[in-house]
Image (cartoon, rainbow, N blue to C red; front, side, top):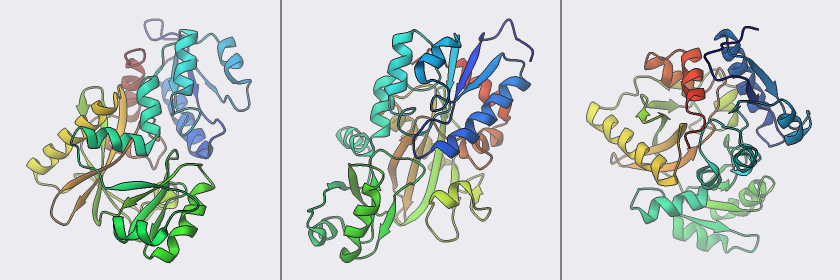
Length: 308
């Protein structure tokens, strides 16, 4: 492996971990590591779940860490806080933004406080009045774990009777579960890279639900680039995504997921502070459409390290 002496020094790519998104993280990290090696960067991969945790990472004496750990333990501020204490620069958002972005419900509270559009929601518990929840939010609605990504544990609920089962399914992934008003319409995702919003992608799924299989396994999911919006609407979507990203305090890179209803209104769903970098992932697709190949994208993300 060749060392780029003018580059970032020794880079450790963190991937794997022990969250429910481990398999996706392994794929993301492997792609990032291979890219850095192609670019002549001195890089090594590290899986904290199998290689000694933080002590093992510290023993590698990294100059910078590229975080490709998805989900809890990598994307929720805990890792970022540890790296801050160790004095190691890292890619992506800082402690507060990472923790907030991982919490879908509190992210929505911030957006609502700032007047940014996001669907109405409420927290669920095992003794909830399911019929009352359905009446307040309307049907259909979405039930989801507050702290999971990759659409794990998410269910579209069509009747009050199905609510309790959806809650219990989501509770397998997280002690905190929320219900959210379902927005019927087109789904978009916008990548933020530095201060720029990359071209929006419209996601079209044959079964109408962008779940785990549609995201990572299916070859039938369609990603429309260009997204098909009129220029003015796409510019409005980009501005909304930048505002949503900044509201949470995010930095470096990330992704904002948005729905557009039949009246043309945009609704913010969530922010991803460590998006996927697999061959099915949306960030590399948006970058490629903007003329940024995968290796250039990885280097640009790496260059943001330490700027949170």
